[in-house]
Image 1 (tube, one colour):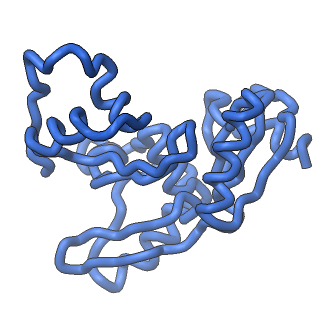
Image 2 (cartoon, one colour; image 1 turned 60 degrees about the vertical axis):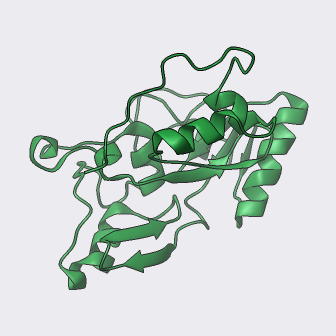
Length: 194
């Protein structure tokens, strides 16, 4: 099993310490906490179609495509879909097709590339000039920070950003405001999502 996960679509190869196949979000959270306690790197992986060796390494490979591969919610009016990281791009488009919608980043590996990997790599494809990159179609991303706490990242209003910076002491608050003793002089400028 470790040998199978020692490569991706790149020329790189490195035997991982272990391979984990989480079935639930709770499994992922426990893996994150385990890695933090034991100071071991985690290598999130879906289809392994990356060409630059992003999903090979000496840590624990976490295959999120094996079990976490469902469409969770769909809102036709808002034109939004919530998916787990292991949903294959072309399978998502088969789901969306009856509604006249499609997820546009068109990689050459679209019949096996999974949304989690596309988000991690900001996948583009030949038509990205017309349709945009993955990040331009991402509304928000939810996951676990290195201490196992859950966080959702997406667009924030200036008031929401200020509230995040002033939140209770947590890893997420420290990400938004790494220097809490220094007042925010120049708030970040925000763009409205398309």
